[in-house]
Length: 345
Image (spheres, helix red, strand yellow):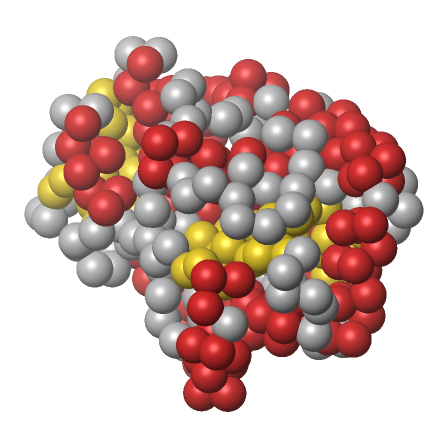
């Protein structure tokens, strides 16, 4: 099948990494794939697509393709144009962030009506977050297909600094307000500096000045890596005693699943999208967004109990192990063939 993949960006995010993994699968199963960049055309992921010998095109002849696959809410303008000509699968990754972008760009809403299929990560994302835009669509056009995850074949352990303290807390995600890494830094700074260290893995955009001052005053207790390759990120997670994600908004974060595959105990914010997947005291510990005091206490409790870390890490592994790439690919392949079969002419 001749497939056009509409890529939003080439930075390293969960959405871009999953899109690349899908491209790998599609190329490996014999499809002819081309990528068109919607947003900025540069970034680390561009080289990864090039490694597949996938052309990254700027001029698109839609008659050359059987179907299109669009990535993220930001692909909406391209969906509006492309889906009028070829069947288009639109892969949604965002939650409230997507709603804000739709309010700022009302012309994007048309994409919900003309995409052949819209994929969501969770029932909550589909039935609550985007319900106002999808209520006219058949539920068969709105499948929930959670991510499938697998660890890199080789982890870049040689690029991970040895632990300097008995407990290492690791978080993965872009350093920007939605991820609330400043909450984690403030929480760790309240705990014994000789017992805990904190690593934040992700592209740097900025932190509040008072948080920067904490980092400068605590020396080697904190380490921010900036943007790294997936093998590096997984190696940092592997080095953790505790994995923590403080985000105010997520859909179904890859990093938490990867931490689960590595048997790491999880601390997550109590977000509605996690319900039915992550349960407090069962396969993670949850705390309210922005409650730094409770976050510090939760970290302290986990740091003090090796048995609790082991129990929660084992439960996180059981959850993550259910979300295999093989299962995701099988469902996506069936969907792709059904959608491409709807093309007229």
